[in-house]
Length: 168
Image 1 (cartoon, helix red, strand yellow):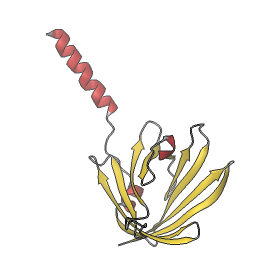
Image 2: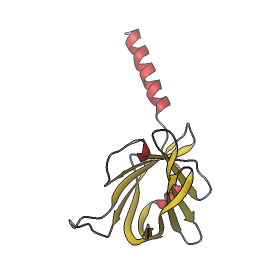
Image 3: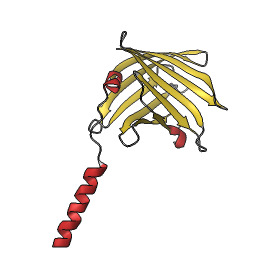
Image 4: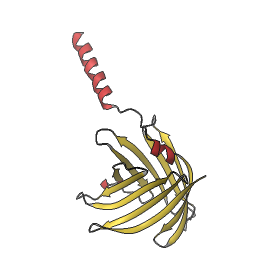
C-alpha cells in the first residue's frame, strides 16, 4: 500500500510540474476576434476572413484563416488553422501552421521571441536555417494588425505577402 501511495504522489507531482498555467498575453488577447484580412500575395490582391479564439483551457489562441477567392472547384483558394501557444521554459511563442498545402513538417512550426506589439515568427528548415518569417505587428492606436510574410533565401528576406487586419 505504501508503494502505491508513493507512486501516486510521484505521478501527481510530475503532472503538476509538467502542466503550464493558461496563457496570459494581453498582446494575443488583441488578436482574438473576427478580422478582415486584406492585402497581397505576390502581386495578387486577396481578401481573407480571419477568426481567432482561445481554446484548450486558454492554452492556445487558434485562428482560422480562409480566403474569399475560390479555386476552380469552388473551394477557398487558401485556408489555414493555426495554434499559437506560450512555452514558459523557453520564453517563446510557438505556432503550428496547418493549411491546404498539407504535409506537416518541421517547417510547419514557427517560434517567436516576444517584442513590444509584435510576434516575429521564424520557421526553419530541416537544417535549422531560417526559411520563412511571419511577423504580426499590432498598432494600438488603430486596433489593427499588419502581417508580413517573407521567404528567406540564403539569409535574405524576400516579400511573399503583406496583409492588414481590421476588426469586424
